[in-house]
Amino acid sequence: MSRGWSRKPTLQYREKARFSVETIWHRKDGALVPVALSGTPLQMNGSTVLHLVARDMTEHNRLERERRYSEARLNLVATSLPVVFYTRTDRASASPGG
Image 1 (tube, helix red, strand yellow):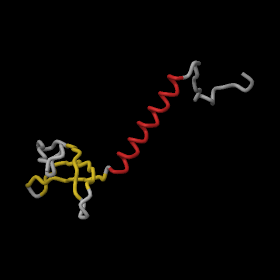
Image 2 (cartoon, one colour; image 1 turned 90 degrees about the vertical axis):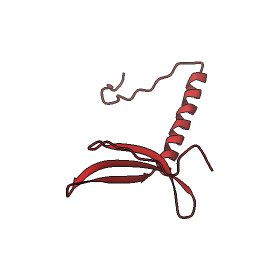
Image 3 (cartoon, helix red, strand yellow; image 1 turned 45 degrees about the horizontal axis):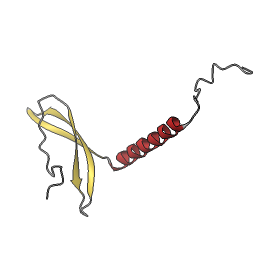
Image 4 (spheres, one colour; image 1 turned 120 degrees about the vertical axis):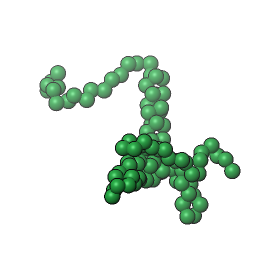
C-alpha cells in the first residue's frame, strides 16, 4: 500500500551533525499524522546516542494552508483593481495634518 511516502523512514546522520526530516506517523486509532523530527547525536558514557524530538505538524500545516489561501486572495484582489493602492505602516513618523 504505497501512498508516496515511507511508513518507516531510514534516518541517516553523520556523527555530531544535527538533522531534521518530515514524515508521517500512524496514531493508535489509525489516523495519519504529519510529524517533523529533529535529531542530534550525543555522546553518553562513551557511546553515541540519538536525541530525537517529534513535533505534530497538523496545526502548523493547516495554518500554512490558510496563509497561502489568504495571500492568493489578496493577490487576486490587488491585481484585479483598476487603480493603484498602497498601505503605509510607518505611522510613528507621520506628522498630524499632512
